[in-house]
Length: 356
Image (tube, rainbow, N blue to C red; front, side, top):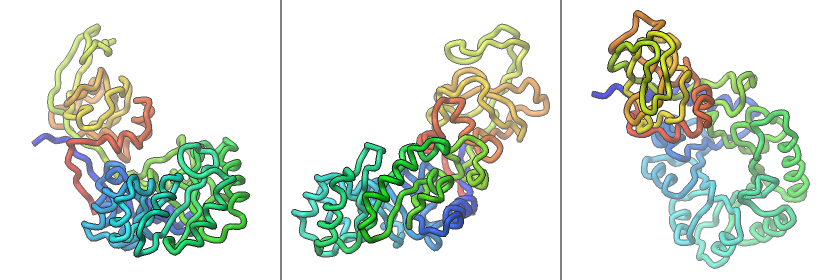
């Protein structure tokens, strides 16, 4: 059996959720969209079912998957509905919804609503992606508050640069939010992981932790709260072949790596079809039998190669950690010019093994 697999530490997931709650004492919706960022939405939701205040997903398909798996906690649709035909299912399965554009307002106005909706109303404070403009937000809020189709309202926005602690954009967005919603009574939700970790003045009543649940930091190393996170996913495989090349020989497609010394090569059962980034450069850190070495040559579909020259005791069958506690996903992502979000979400083909 091919040795590539992902080990998911559910204890670390619980720890990271509790950290989000403990930092500021707020309620927190665990964001488990995109199959829990590649970690397995059902298992992650089941793990947090007793402790989480609720969950957040991108779309109704993800929400129904959780409901059918027995998850009864609140589930928020972060993008609301895409078509008004979803509204009966939203009512049937008691889903919370984000409303962020005028088309959704029209759908709600025209729909037959038997069970009033719990609505999170999105304010665009500067992200300029989705949400209502500040000058129209108050009137929309009061209109929804007056209709019998809505049972409750949460004020909501999203920060565009909360992962940059020295940037004043977050404070500008917070000021816009506070000024716009000052006369609107009700709970608020502003912060994703970066906000929850670094912006205590912007917490609101509901946090929306995402990437931090999975133990990856949205910051450069050194952020004190992010340093308390525990990696949830460990991507593992084994060395499946070993050989030697002379100085000046190439390794892999495109001859992107040329050996500068006699080099002992280890071939690992892991490639971009598994989700390991194809653009990871030579030098990307890897652990072999818990010893640090590096990737050499181009990542191919099913295999990659690592330098074993200075690790004479390792060889055929040696364990390989591609990312996890020993090599953080953020470090690998940096070598591949991407972010850990993409590494996790791109995980494919490899089986997931769960550690409770």
